[in-house]
View 1 (cartoon, rainbow, N blue to C red):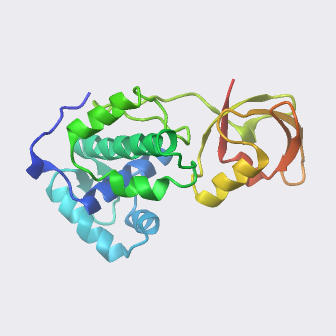
View 2 (view 1 turned 120 degrees about the horizontal axis):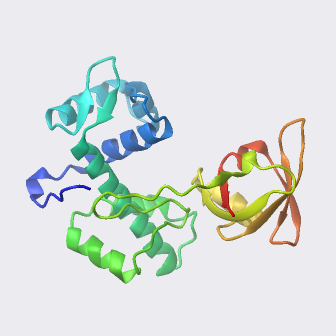
Length: 229
């Protein structure tokens, strides 16, 4: 559980929120491994020297543990602020899809701007207006206001064998080209998928979609798609 901070002077800047969010996501991708400066620079598409300056500033604010050449990890408060930013981002994505008719491949950049609005009351009202959604349009869990976050046990399509299947519930890759490809082959969230064959040459999969047509998906696609059931 997190203690909510309401002092405006304690709120991070736009750039600081982006750094905290990036560090949180990188640490979640590799649990127990401190995040390197170079990985942060790669994700944020900036210079390592700029990253070092920002890490020093965030360390002074006690938002992360930072030692040069040793990597970084978020403090309790840094993790809270990262999850708050992710919460706002994912709620705005739900709003854009459900209420404004955006496609799931169109919302990320817009939500990147809206996630930096600093109004706890607005976000509470938004959550209520959307009827307290648990997942965003890409299947990612939405953190609660206190920082609690669901850890659903989904299966990666790449791990399925012929005869296995389930409902598409989440994607790992949220880039517009990937989501547009999934739409083209009928693999949006909620689609029913069954593996018919696994090609030993390249691990591509022949699948049945919605008990109807078939498709051949690459190993790369299967590594970025989750099912439940």
